Length: 548
Image 1 (spheres, rainbow, N blue to C red):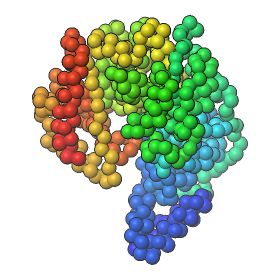
Image 2 (cartoon, one colour):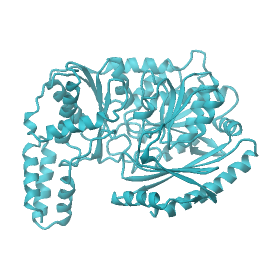
Image 3 (cartoon, helix red, strand yellow):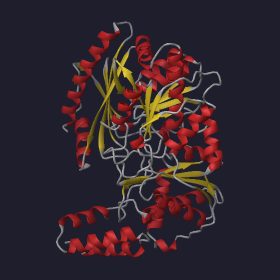
Image 4 (cartoon, rainbow, N blue to C red):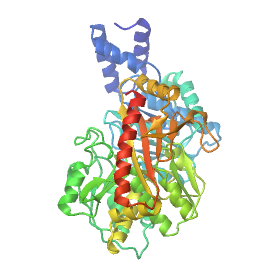
């Protein structure tokens, strides 16, 4: 049974819900709960436990009825709150691009957003169809917008959706903007949904935006650069393929061997349980096709194409490069070509980038996790985070961009191929020059979020003093420093071992980022074997320390 208070809350929500599907879902849950169905009662309790938190990632959560789910009521309140925030800054009449991916309800959520922004006196530019997130983010500066919204849950499971907000500089929101928008959303949520003004007087954007993005991406490849490369591509059931085809054609690279089963948008993501190239098995189809085609490289985007992964033959076997390996390859290529500016990566990424930048006399910055921080680094030449996110053209898109990253990878591989080299050989050269930097990740997905809080409390109160056989010092990142704002995380460092532990900002996961570093000058094969052994010890030690 549910309480009278919860019943009243459910009925009030049901009364204002404009979506017949979620309204019917509420009716069914309520009827089942009244019939003694404990699971239905629990679902209602969870769905109405509190509002879906609006933070620096905007909104993200499972689809369904209630304030703790993604639905038309929650999205409408978020749009009205964003509009109120922009008006408070004196931006009435300002342009706001609204993009969306091909997930369930993304187009509906985007249309609601556009209508509400228009009703508030802003000028929404609604994308005419599903587009990659970086294309919409590119549109912020291209159209001189005061803000941007992209309806996407990126690489989350199919039952999720999300609401990503950018401000006029083209970067994702950071404090205090997130709290200010959240406060406006709370004010809106206290009033009837019918009080929110709407208008359908706004333009659609499509061809012009894509054409401008394609031209910009194509300009990243010099006219005299080699272009002979055999490659495989998967869009991971997302929206990247059409724009990738246009960009690759404009750049002059040949067409890829496409993973047919994953090339078209499909919100069910039928071939992968989690549509993230990092997840085990997600790129198996791409690897199989790469072997068949004798490809030089296989490239995968995540569903909204803001992330990019690459796979190549390493030690005689096809495997996906880690995010840190690909970051080092891209940075090394830029540094070799004399690209100046600040090189940046997140605190959970490898320390190799800082060493490389210093060797080339370029500034380096460490940021908190997320491109809301990396994209704001002044004078950014290149930024990345280990979760296969790369900013390769900060002047146009100060955010992760899986399509321009794809272009950079193709140019790099074609150049190596023309010189009789390969990705594997270039990785060897980097390790020889800068030392072995082996990285790995422990990831614990939980159903009960209290397990994450308990694990973080455990490593704060009784932090490990030895990892992989060497003493380590601990730093609580929640205290902040001159370099980094406060964040929920712990850093452990020794001479060879470095570990960062933090909760995921977008998924119910606790993540542990590990690095083993051995200095340059040794026998590369022996050092890699030694680093592998040390990493196995560090992983086992951290698993015990976390108690998960």
